[in-house]
Image (tube, rainbow, N blue to C red; front, side, top):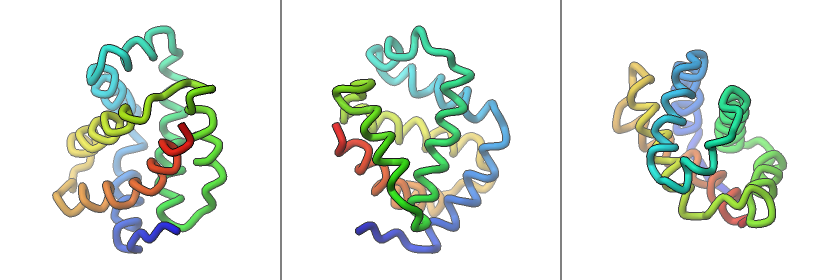
Length: 135
């Protein structure tokens, strides 16, 4: 059972709201994430990035909602699609994903602070672990 403080999930929900209405947030995220590893860059080379950004928007929202007590069904489905039999997203790549997300939030959230960063890390950790654990 996850235990995310209500305060953390509120901070994250508000932070995401400040960032997700600007498409450049998602473009900047993928620029960072894809430059974090040649293997990750290769993974996205033939990808429709507009569609991928839409999927990312939804995926982050699912992590946020899970931290707020919603069902894990969508994250379990995401884990299945990303496992070794699906997209084969290696478990170690999730740390790069998190770091790209935090760096992009830092750039785009006008009230980003150490408290906001800590809230994000605590709030999304259970959901990311659920997805990564499906590998």
